[in-house]
Length: 264
Figure 1 (cartoon, rainbow, N blue to C red):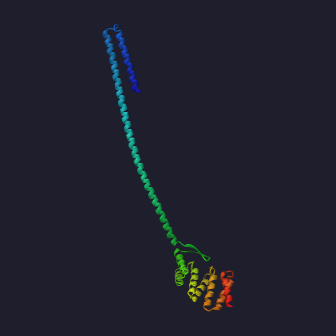
Figure 2: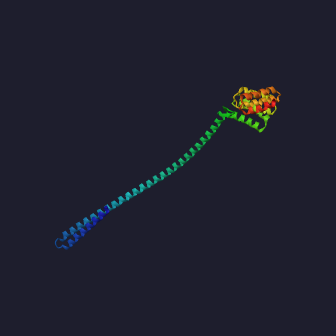
Figure 3: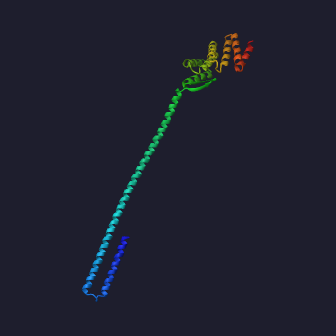
């Protein structure tokens, strides 16, 4: 805008100078030659002075514009450097964030594994609620496993080994809720092994110590079978009559009726 204004002004001055010169030439006769020359020289000096002044202004403006452009370039370069530094920092932060995410994922996995391991250790020592043959009680994991192992041996048909397993269980777990069941299955293993006296002794012990145990009618029937094997018919009859009296609706009572009928 400024350059345009200076150029137009310069043009107007030139036009005025030409007009004045032309007028001076046309009216040369009016003025004296010396005065005309002075006027022309003065006008030329003014025109030259204005031209120089205009040129200097143009130079100054060009230099100012050049300085402004240089400053702008420096600012853009500085901004670009800052942007590149910011991008590098962002990349660094993304890498750090990814590393933290992996470390947190590893921590969660380790925590989960540790929790599972702790739960497993707690389960091994924490009592387990057991419901068996009408009885409910708490048992330790090792205790439960020992009884189930002995019962598995019995069901496999190794009755001699089953006797050993149940005797060992009873020796180690005298206060266990599995004791009635262990004595019951021990007596059965002894009966099958033809240790009728040992079996009879354990069945009697069971009836005396756990009268509410669900398998008491079966235990009494087994007692009668032991007595019959030992030729104690009178004792067997009494035991069978007790079953009919105490447990008339049990399956053991049905079997007791049949055996009493055969004994008469």
